[in-house]
Image 1: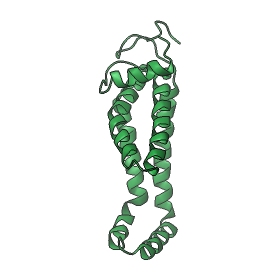
Image 2 (image 1 turned 120 degrees about the vertical axis):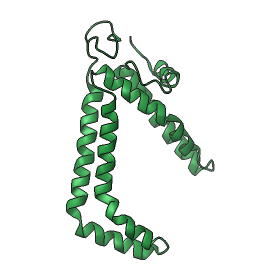
Image 3 (image 1 turned 90 degrees about the horizontal axis):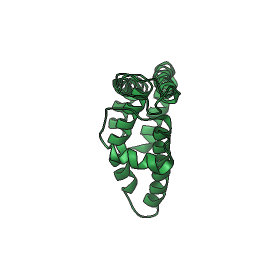
Image 4 (image 1 turned 30 degrees about the horizontal axis):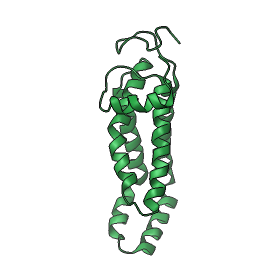
Amino acid sequence: MNVDFLTAIKLFFANYVNFRGRSTRAEYWFAMLFVLIASIVLSVLSVLGLPYISTLFSIAVFLPGLAICFRRFHDAGQSGWLVILLYVLSFVGLGIMYGPMLSSIIEYANDPIALQQAMLHYMSNHIGSIGLGALIILAAAVWELIILVKPSAPDNKYGPNPYGEYK
């Protein structure tokens, strides 16, 4: 099944919370391109006087974005739950990078200059943990990208090949 840009957008919203089945590379990437373009346009509109419209859009596309990622993993022959694992790894990386900074952020929340100094001090003294957290996030992102660009697998436990043959 070949999917064009408009069809991908329709499928993206038609399968709003459908975590089963498969989505082709074209369906996934066209949908993500739509989300990117819409996010940029809505961010500009937010700056021009429509506050929160970008945030509302991000909330609205979170579940379908997660669902299409699950289906894309299925199409590549991987479990969709791997998406959750990769997100958890990314949050662990963020926690390693910035978790210890939270006490400074809370302590100096009302003093921007002291907060900036505390953050600079933290970053200069914790380069190892910042690097480790960044490495974990990078590894999770690369792992996810490798799966997202894989071609459709033959018929698998998630459904038949959308193209009808191995591509």
